[in-house]
Length: 306
Image (cartoon, rainbow, N blue to C red; front, side, top):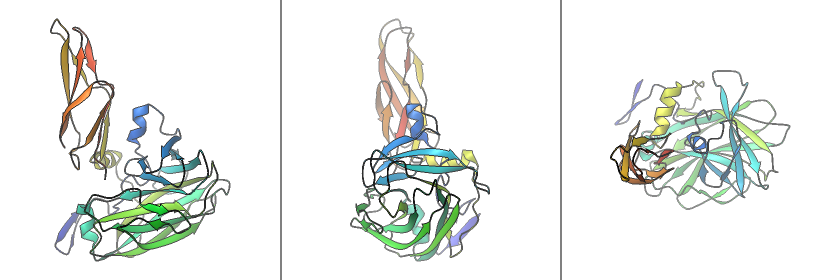
């Protein structure tokens, strides 16, 4: 589907501009070998499920992918449990400037389905924010002071918000926000309105945002398409192997061509050896190995997030 907005042409098979809207993808969890349903402690201002940055007022949030029984086309949910000590917590997603520009001077609708367990969390708040600083140079720790209504850092402005009183069953909440021309990067924020106790949880699914005042019905993208979209920002691979058959110890190289061009030249992490060179398209890894031995990187990650 193509849509002309002013001078911009936006092409989308799915009008939802939120990535990974039910937490199906959690590539970072694969690095540690944990199962996707295993709660993993994430510190403040660190990514959990693909494209979702976890925020909290203290210590950690345990994040996992829940297999949930919410009616509709969604299958999974992002589960956040307050861990280590009490406090406020939530998550946000940031859009690139190139994706934000078509929505300047337009109205968007943002919403999701959310619930708690055992009446642990009484209320969540959702908000549409904007970054007016340098394009794609967002200070991702956006909260300067936590509360029912957070105070934000410089260059972050809240355009609209809504609250939802939670029950143990899914309910939907949504809002409309007018996006000014000064918005260089859109930010979608979901957070608790109270300081919660250890173990208190929220589950979020069918997270979506689209042009206009009407929140469109949730529709899942194909899993492969969702993965490809998210791999622009972060990509994980297992072993890259190269066999030394030279007859002596040699420096071995293995090149990994990314499945998707990255947003920028990414930051590379290699399980074994070093990243020798990298670009938005590929990386070459290096390690010294004896003759007859396979150089095995164990894993490689490429991080090009905002």
